[in-house]
Image 1 (cartoon, rainbow, N blue to C red):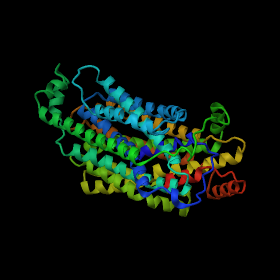
Image 2 (cartoon, rainbow, N blue to C red):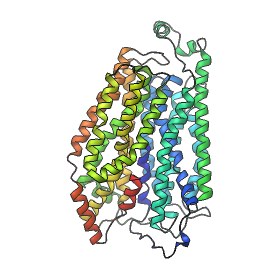
Image 3 (cartoon, one colour):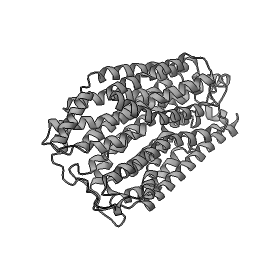
Length: 518
């Protein structure tokens, strides 16, 4: 779910003052087939993002058998680089020229082969003694760049598929459905393929002997159940191959089934004011700063849970053979909970939904840490956690349009800053996820995490419990406290909407809010 954030960052590529064309007849309506082909293009980003989010850390530690300190560098640098590439790619896309394939489609078509290759190599274990850190750092960052080259223009493509606003909104609804299903599919493919193989590990007695000898883990692997390790690595490669194949298939369906319409909209060529002046205005808008700061803490909390949950299930609870199924239960629960939270926020208001939704995760986090190794109870916790996960990643994107409306009312002469609002929210949340993953993996290193161990020392188990419960609990409390300072309640939101409609300055936030909430 983390990966929904980038979908809105490309909205600033479009002219916010462009009026949607009113349809005079139904003959140019977008067909259902075209909407489905467009929606399918949203799957690759979600599938790959979910697989990497849940499984990359455990892959680096237990399959590559990399030191936790080195893994923390890769995870942190990859996420931070991913954050930086959003505005950079958005800038280059906005300067693109029209071609025979369109303006946005070349980015999607030509980035796909390289993205698939780098994704596949991210899950490959090279037979090199030195240089593994550089290998994964390079290919992980390259993949993040290339998938951004796919997803940013794909997000902007919404405005180029039809002149009809109703068509765009309908196509966005199809897309959101496919993207939500993509998160489930990514968890299912990666988890079920990898989970069918008996995970390679070394007994704690054997690892204890290594501490007092010159023999390395690699030496022991060559003589102790090396077939199991090779089988696990092969399983990760098979999963990568399946996901890469789906990526290519989705890109083909998108490129064959969707045509850019040059007269549907236009890219923004001239900013009304300079970027830095716009940035200063946006960052001085109190509601935006408070909203971003509050959700920065809550996002960091849920990212920390996501990044460490597989290790927690495997070592702290002992669900070595079932952790992938529990992860799938989390994502299925989150998917099914999205309509509920949409109804809840429209019925009780967005601030109430935030307090209730995010705080509801706390009992389940506590239960996960305090319970004994009970598989049935583990699934109950997974379902409950999924309910909160849905609210944590749905609500921010339903509230940012309210901030933009408030900004437009207070700054009526300063238009066209949607890109800054969204791209910097994306940047800060991805930067926070990099910090949470990097710090948590580094914490495992300090606790004495044993690479390739069947069991972990007590200090590691305690650290995993802190990373999955105590630290997220504190981050959530800080985020909810900061959110209390957020000034836009339902009364103010409705007043802003009414004022914008009366002044005929209603921003493009209605479409953005629909896209975020479907």
